[in-house]
Image (cartoon, rainbow, N blue to C red; front, side):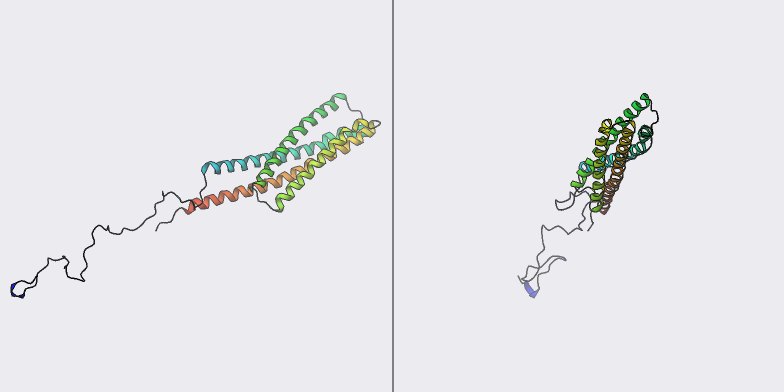
Length: 229
């Protein structure tokens, strides 16, 4: 609309003109705010998430395996020392024709039986935990695991052979023959426990190495956090 005198209509400051080509104000659009990704945002399914309960279970399983392996190795070495010294000495006296009292022989047999059962049960438990963790890929893996388990298995076979030889001691003729068989059986059993102990010690390093790697990986993931944009 044109006013008299050719005056153009005046628009207040800041008011947009209605002529074509002019830009109308944008209503309903909020000003853009900088985007921040909060640290308490729930991670998506694509992000790696470690459940606390599962982490605790894996850690406790590794600790139990290491305790069993260390205990089994120590008991195996202790039995090997006993077999090579005191136990062998009793049969060596038999072989040399020396007198051995019935009480000493009975005491040696009792102690050997208890020692053998305890060391054998703990060693088998440790070996089972080690193999189960290796099957679940919770050990270092590779040649170290295979070599350690093979060495422990060879030790178990040696122990069984020694126990079989011990069961034939009474069949030998004469005290000297019985003593010789006893010495041989004791050395074979003791050597088997020594091999078993070395194998279990290898297992300690393979299990501990994997637990340490998992712990460092979790610490690295926790320290990375979420990025802020």
